[in-house]
Image (cartoon, rainbow, N blue to C red; front, side, top):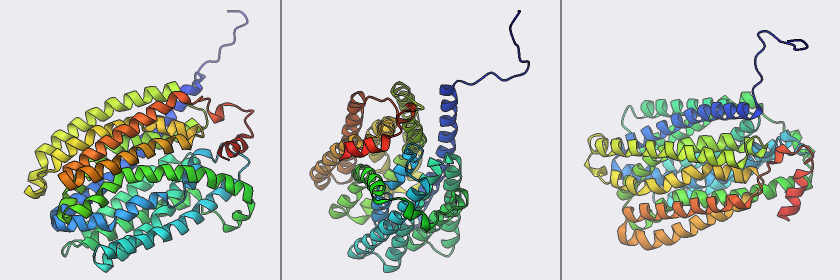
Length: 440
């Protein structure tokens, strides 16, 4: 044809939406593999503890790590979430200075969680050596969370997945090596600590360690902006973490430690279901903040995720009914029934995690905070009513009801958000100031 220019062998351009979708799939797959490896290591450690230590020792292990599990992810004050979701959006904020702010917050927050771990463990009568090791886990975990966030904000999600895999392998190898002469609770806590340290050692060379001199670049108004955003995020995360872990602490007040150990095995198994939605939402967060995916796309993703979670849960429940007693023994015969009660709520919350990530990416952490508050109130009421009367089945039922209400609150808030995507508007150079004005 006259006037037409044909370039032989030139690749066809990939639409932006397709490219973003491919990156999301790749990042989610890499992160899901790393999280699956981490979960497999944690699950294997938990099951080995159940087998080698018995319900009493398994319960002690759960209580020793209860405070770090509940509070360590919150110790950075939500600044890690800011780094992951907004470092590329608020161009006026020096990313390196925000990273240093997050690392300092993690250092002080980790120290506070370590003190709380010591106080709780000694009050529960746990062995002093075990409590000290658990406090060390609490001290280093927040820093690792910030390092993960820095890598995520720099589009190094694949590296985060690799770090999780290395951490998992280290933990499993340490469990086998330390327990060779007879397993103790301290061996399993030490393995957890070594896994955390190994994961951080992989990522630090990838991101580089920010210099402390970067602190001076972040002036007080900008620092307040980051802290204000993080404060709202961490309050919501605190309530959500309580929704996931508080029932163990309440159970410990009403039932023997051995029953806590049985319930902990059910929680370990149900956490398998969390890994896929967690990976998707963590990969999705910076992309929704940058406007690479709109609300309709995220809703479709949540629907597909729900179908996958149902299939995964059905297969897992069938395997649990078949393998629990032969593998763990008759003391754990109640695990499949507890799992069956927990799964419906976990499925609902898991399917709505992409919606929660999208809400946060739109600069609306307060809405997720309100959804988590709904679940927290329901969980507290359910635990206090059902656990004294029904024990571990009551705890599982309270969890499912609370998770269902949390998921409903997340879904209800989505139509209320404009959903333009902060990164989709080039004229939005002052977006950080607008967030600050809205939060004031």
